[in-house]
Image (tube, rainbow, N blue to C red):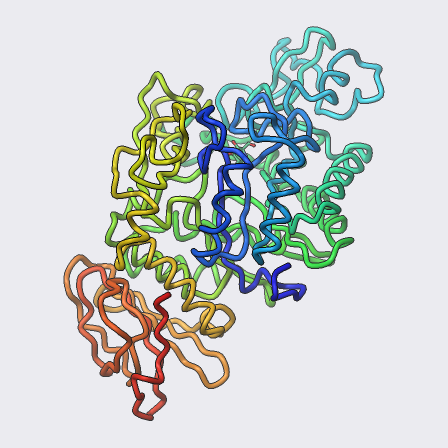
Amino acid sequence: MASSDDEEWWRRAVIYEIALISFQDSNGDGKGDLAGLLRRVDYLKWLGIDAVWLTPIYRSPRRDFGYDISDFCAIDPAFGTMEDFDQLLGTLHDAGLRLILDLVPNHTSDEHPWFRESSASRSNDKSDWYLWAEPGGDGGPPNNWLSRFGGSAWEWSESRQQYYYHSFLREQPDLNWRNSAVQAAMSTVMRFWLTKGVDGFRMDASAVLIKDAMLRDNPPNPDANDKMPPPQRFTPVFTDDRPEAMECIELMRKVLDEFPRRLLCGEVQGKADRIGHFYEAERPRLHLPLNFALLDAQWNALSLQAAIDTYFKALPDHAWPDWVIGGHDKQRVASRIGAAQARVLAMLLMTIRGTPFFYMGDELGKPRAPVPRERVDDPFERLVPGFGLGRDPERTPMRWDDGEAGGFTAGAPWLPMLDDPSCNMLRQQNEPRSMLQLYRQLIALRRRYPCLAEGEYEPVRARNGILAYRRSLGETRMLIGLNTADEPRRWNCGVRGSRLISTYLDRPAEPVDPSILLRANEGVVVLQADGRETDPSDVANVRG
Ligand code: NOJ
């Protein structure tokens, strides 16, 4: 088990999201699997992360990347067996790494036995396990609620002569979380995995667990326009963020808390002002509502400074922050801000106060990979085309080496691979200044200086395109300066100290003056000397 065995280990952890299907194949079927991931545990250890979050590995018809689950307590055969899972969990724990699974409480697959039973008639044991409703006045859907994946969120069932509700695909019916039997069933699912020893969950779609009981129509979005995907042209007042959804989260947290040292993080989409109430009110809710502020912000020092400030301000007292810079739903950040600034972002992520989350391939600077129309897998792209919503470009397989199919598979990869040989693990491992080495060194620096993980955060006014802040813990003071410009900029950091690391990775730790010329796209971490001259030999050499 990990050495940092305390209750709130996740405050200091670096969390790495893995979409198993694209990580490492072991049997040549072109899809990543548990045995493949097992082979890469050494890599995870080398990289220095603390915990893996795995996207769904459960039995699923896989119409939505495994988020359509037909058995919550079985491993999908494409990924391996329960024995493979147990072996993986044991190996990760032996390596001091933790494992977080996706928990998808809002919906099941329409192939789940619960739904099969519920939809068979109006009078079975599970008849009230999903959201069933009579047609609207015109015989059509009960109201104007739209699915995220396009069209009405209501689907007609011949057998019941009623509609059922689905926030996402029609093959993903929403569970009725007002039903205590559903609550109990999901608690059993959680206990199943927690008893096995998983270290927590990332709760999917945590904001939509409860829908308005009166089925009131959502109002038109006043900012709607033709460039917006149709589902966003209404404001989801009656389908998202209902107060009772918080009670469901509290209930699941209570189950989690039956087990020591477990983490509950959760998907919360939207603006920073929505995040606060997901943390805790009278009862605990999520430990970490996932924060995408860095992905949503414009990429310049002033906008970033504002986004960071808004987020910190939105947090309740004692809430622990977190930062997510990539994920299986999010456009690859390296494509948006470019390779040079992606290095700056890496430094920001690993030096700001809060738990960092990044997504497999971010550590290689992986950009979006083009996926031709005939290879599209994501239903979002097929059902709401023309808005660039498809998530396949983020989900293409990892390249590990220069081999055929990048060492990912001996067969044909399930999605096309990124056609950029430099974006491969082995090459970057052998390049002292690669993005991968930067990630590794930043993670090592964070571990070496608890100030970076746990210290107080204090903003420094951004000037000249440089985002800056101070971190402090006990006697230690650190300053971080991030040049968001593509040209050299002077940074008056105002202190003497030692530069511990530059995003260029080209200089040893060395003393610096209160005024530093940052190179184009350069970020630096300065350990403040507090008036005393620093002997460079004092300074950690964080190179591994
Ligand atoms: C959020 C998941 O991250 C996303 O990939 C999925 O499509 C929806 N929830 C539906 O489960």
